Amino acid sequence: MGIHRVGEQRGTPILEENRVSRVDTENYRERIWTELAKVARPDSRFHWDFSSFICDFEGSEECSDRVLQMDALTKRGDRRVFITPDNCLEDLRYKLISRGVSFVMTTYGIVRGFYELDSSKIPASDHRYAATLDGFDRYAKPVSLDQLRKGSPFSLLVTGGSAVSSNGVRFGKGHGYFDFEWAILSELGLTDKSSVVVDVVHDCQFVNEVMPAERHDVAVDWVVTPTRSIHIDQTTRQRGQVYWEMVPGTEFERLDVVAELRALTKENQT
Amino acid sequence: MPPELTQVGTESDHDVAHPLVGPLTFCRYSYRRIWSKVPDVDARREKAGDQPLYSRVRHELTDMVLRRALDDTSPLPPEPRLMEIFAVSRGTLRRAIDDLVREGLLSAEQGRGTFVNQEERLRRVVWERLKHVAIPDSRFDRDLREFVPDFFGSEEATRRVMSLEEWTSASRVFCAPDNSVERLRYEALSAGKNVLVPTYGLRRGFIHLNGSVLSRSDLRHAASLDGMELYGVVLGPGDLRRFGNVDLIVTGATAATSDGRHIGGGQRYLALEWAMLERLGLVSTAVPVVALVHECQLVEEVVEADHDCLIDFIATNSRVIHVWGSTGSASNEAPRSLRRIV
Image 1: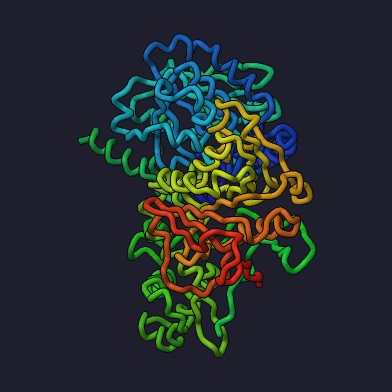
Image 2 (image 1 turned 90 degrees about the vertical axis):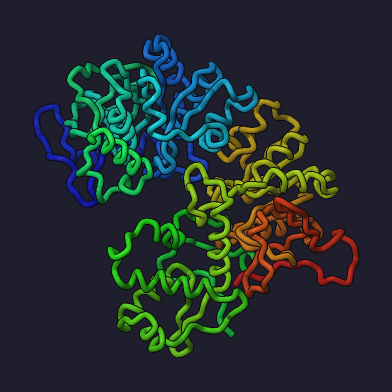
């Protein structure tokens, strides 16, 4: 997973013992989706089309509770929380809102960029609603990249995904949105070595094999499932950045945030 | 007389069985669309000079069609004339026309001419106006082909509906899953009414929500598409009778005429839903229909179209239009009926 040019081959297959090639990811995806279908909750619009959304699943509430215990959240100080609009994180968003924890989230497909939700402004009767994609739009405020970079760095970044390997590489029929969000936030100077990346998935989405990471893949620090939290040593993770030469021909090319980021980074260079 | 257009092209994956002409079956509507997105979105994405020629002809032809008066039902100029106007070969012109036929905007008949699908043109014209006042969907953004939008001023429209006697006295309300109707679904539940909502694209049947048993802190969530399935009972077409008789129908629309015709998104969901309920004896033409639209969605011109239910009340951001007056009373006006779907 990651940013792929339309039609381009997905990475170089590396065949070693216990290593999974990119070519195998298709097989994994089929098997995972078959298992996932047994525990997944449909999306209001996309139904069971897993290629259009990251689904919620039975046990996601247990995942939320684990994330709420993490130091990256409880000891974040004035540093911020980023969360993706994946359905499996709706319960976590609800719990953050009811605890008065504000967060930054992207809109579906990053189409309208980044939004900020001030949890203290939401009446208790609307907490669950504000955690949904429909409700989020009513309460959150859009935030430009320029405004974003003036705030504090991110202590915790939480995403869902299609599948994840034992070395924390996410793969499957994703579009690479989180990788791109991480890249943007990194370019804005909002991520550092103490930023913790958490992937929330069902147990059937965790593959106990090592997967090669492409340079734009963000390897996660934690995989949180309903039954366990797996910590992965990511001391070798590179600083995030946008690989501009990879953007043309992808769905990212037309996003307003991309134009905005280009303008901002040009500014920095002059 | 130009043939009425329903599904155009062979690539549709809509498997439609119309209950009016056959036994009642559960119709599988796919939410997938094979038509491209509304033209100005394409225009934004294609850089001038980078487009293939037929694509530019397609845009210009679309503009030509949309700029016509809405009541102009004459065919387009013949092919040789169009080739002259756009200064292109027959092949390029045909390719552009084929695209627009696939999109449902045109119909090309050998020997008879190229005709405009009036209903689709009306939708495009209204979508252009709507873009200024529509609220983006959480997933579909401003792709109005995929959803019926909420709009600036829907709060006022909602309040106007709530002031109607037909609203106050209704205890069982059918509400479309349109974004513009979300506030009203909330108000219905808040007032303890029973609400029947089809799931988006009818993919998971109908949801029966009982406002009188929900706790206040769940109402907003239950009124949303994302939340409602957690609080209601799923009813397949065979179980719909359990809901009971419908007192009021509330819907959004793509467009509405002041004489009460409803133009939806093109998939005929409302007509289908109404037909299902009518078959089961849960609605009749005596049940009032309320539509919520923005003023810009009102169309005065008579448009030859396969419209759905006839509307009794149109509530906009600035007024309520009573189309039929008090329902159920014997009057000189023709009884409201549903046109047969071809």
